[in-house]
Length: 410
Ligand SMILES: NC(=O)c1ccc[n+]([C@@H]2O[C@H](COP(=O)([O-])OP(=O)(O)OC[C@H]3O[C@@H](n4cnc5c(N)ncnc54)[C@H](O)[C@@H]3O)[C@@H](O)[C@H]2O)c1
Image (cartoon, rainbow, N blue to C red; front, side):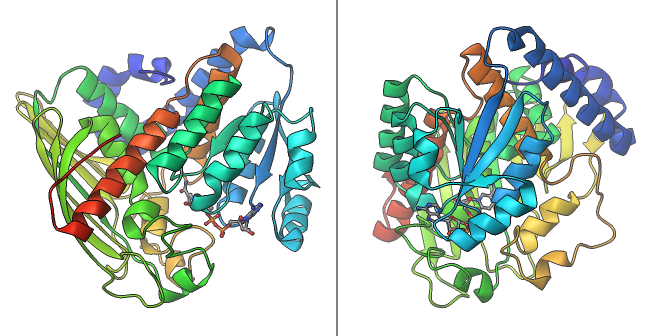
């Protein structure tokens, strides 16, 4: 697997046999991952620019996660600039993280800036990202890559013409649970996949949708609970279960006002490998429950719930039952990042916190991206993967609008 953590993979069998010590293992996995990141970058440091400098464009809810993730990486990476169309927001952000503010044009023209990371509304990702690629910057774009396949394609075309790197944030691929399940699948331990289930029973208040004029619009959010919140799970499903061939869906705006998009959607899926699946996403399931992916094969089953490996049952082996959802998985289920209301602080005491917490997965994805830049490799979540998630989501929307089975064209 591209960009994955080989040092973690080598210890998989050992760790799987003592799964009951999960909190200790999570800490060990985090340490192993840090060691991997350091080790994987050392051989290349001498051959690449000593310092990779970053600028953030869009200083809203998710931007602090990017700033903190970059600050936690080795000292050959530095965030220096930020930009927001609201100057006051850019200045407050710059003050908090010790940055300089600049206009977008100035960032593009500044030869000292190597990488631009976009935390802007989803429907602006292509128009801004293609300009950055044309200015010879490496580019990181928050999920979803864009809101239409055509816009994703324009980013891919710009990336290929530029020879620079492009990655789409889909941080949950880097969770230890996702990495571990991917290794289980790669080793063929589940057998032939026959059924995949994905659920995103989240909650967002009306205030969340009212908090930004772009939220809940087709043009800039690209959709509702599936495009904005569900894209994480869609990307994981594609990564773990493979491409989807056809979809049949229904959607509603069930429990929110003043939004154009769906807050409830269900779909049945037929995968290219012949397996079938079901999907449910919502932002109307008060108070919000952890996202879930269940995979069932001819030799076993596995499930991730709330970013934790919840179940691993392989024929002839001891069944492994995981812990409850991580605290941050419950936080995003109940309210999200900064856009959340008071609901998001209500994390039940029974949940685990673990060594893997909010921001760690972004940090791991940035490290994977930097590794790709330094080695001229391919980031784990590249533009092709980003476009595949957007294509599947839009096929599901097409089916819900037309009432027909729709083929996924990526
Ligand atoms: N990976 C995750 O877990 C995660 C979580 C939240 C949001 N996101 C994604 O991050 C993106 C931003 O979401 P958010 O919740 O931070 O939104 P937000 O509205 O809180 O922040 C967006 C910021 O972009 C600024 N902006 C808009 N147009 C701009 C332009 N042309 N130039 C410069 N700045 C501009 C806005 O003023 C605003 O401050 C979205 O694509 C969203 O889907 C990802």
